[in-house]
Length: 507
Ligand code: FAD
Image 1 (cartoon, rainbow, N blue to C red):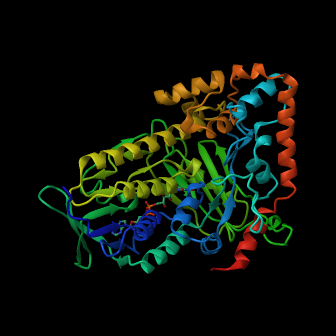
Image 2 (spheres, helix red, strand yellow; image 1 turned 60 degrees about the horizontal axis):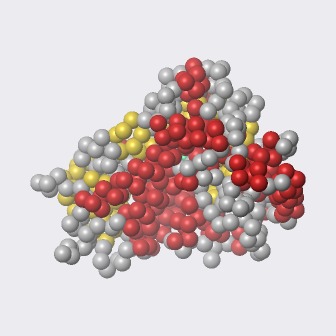
Image 3 (cartoon, protein in one colour; image 1 turned 45 degrees about the vertical axis):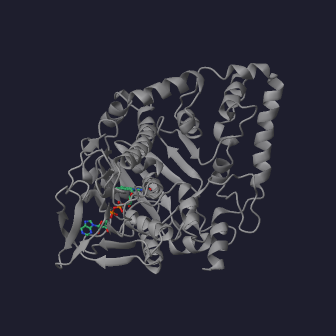
């Protein structure tokens, strides 16, 4: 039997999660049917980091009808083709985890298998020499031009570095223009029905706001999902032991001003440099560089972590260093009763592969797919929780991989990471890859870059390749390299791409 529709959604929190959720819901839900209110506290503020993204954000923006030029202008964004990892497999090593695939699947066989076979034939070219994104990234170029978009670079293969606060502000305008009501105030009490469903929230001002569906975007505070419903948090810090970060933005280095049009020449990639007890990010935006040092407090003091960061900034610091604390893990259920937790209230995986904003996007799109009525069916909640859990675990294992697969032995932190027991599923995938280079379909593309980048070279290549003549394999590999080199010559500098969009202005 059809039940009554949700008439009022209340979102608690106005960080990236709150405003992404508000914007997506306002875009997709008919206003006549359902009102949306967002409550945020200016005094509490937001976590204020989260600047590197993965390509899915483009799909999110497209669904909302956000024009790329406007987005880039409003969020001070630059383009991102992947992540350059320094000192991970060993001090002095470096590799690029590009978006998109290396080479092309030929005759149904993954490209990295061809690379392995070519290697066995004596070829010495690195895997990244077969990636358009990596090669363009190293050259500071970008594989699209605003006027003439080559089709060789598949959709979904680039992303952005953004000012996360500016993105939240932009989405706030977007959502409010589409009817979302914003209320500034601090939630001091959460009121429940007899069946424990949330009935309303009370603000410091005394105002009470009733709702049918509540979205908890209150960040690490997790006011509703934890504070009210006591949903347990599954602690994953035995596998992801970092629990702190120190962040500080800085100016661009003077040497960066060297692009063909005299503007700032920016690296179109994030840098992740392993440090003695953690790692450091570097994220170039148009007007500054975002920097942060993720570390483990059990192995490193705040002061030492801060010194490492501040002594390695590429330009003059623009703010005092800020310390953040976190615990890796996820909420056992992201959806309980009439509360859905999205963003940091639903879990935290450290930012090594820039996946948190993607998890917000996933949370909102799954909620829309399974959007409830007032009956709140348990099977729909279970399905939501199942799919969120699946993605969290997939990403968790992938991040653990980076820390575990290392030869570094220069500190207690790396000794711990190298020797720690890892989840069974990850151990299985690691053995599979180490033996024969095979990967799970869900991990396709990302595993070869990271494993090979961190010196896990599979022992065997795909046996089907022995049906192909050795010279033919060498020729195929040479063709790939030449194709990339000739395409590179036609690509614009990454910052020229940005400048071209900026001069277009807002539509
Ligand atoms: P918050 O930003 O904390 O927002 C919480 C909101 O709730 C605020 O508006 C606050 O005012 C409100 N609130 C809280 N309590 C109350 C109350 N009582 N009353 C009213 N309002 C209240 N993600 C990426 O994708 N890429 C990255 O590169 C990346 N880097 C990160 C680096 C670090 C060190 C950390 C910690 C996170 C990083 N993240 C990254 C994650 C990213 O920052 C978050 O996923 C994102 O900012 C979403 O946060 P949020 O909106 O859930 O929480």
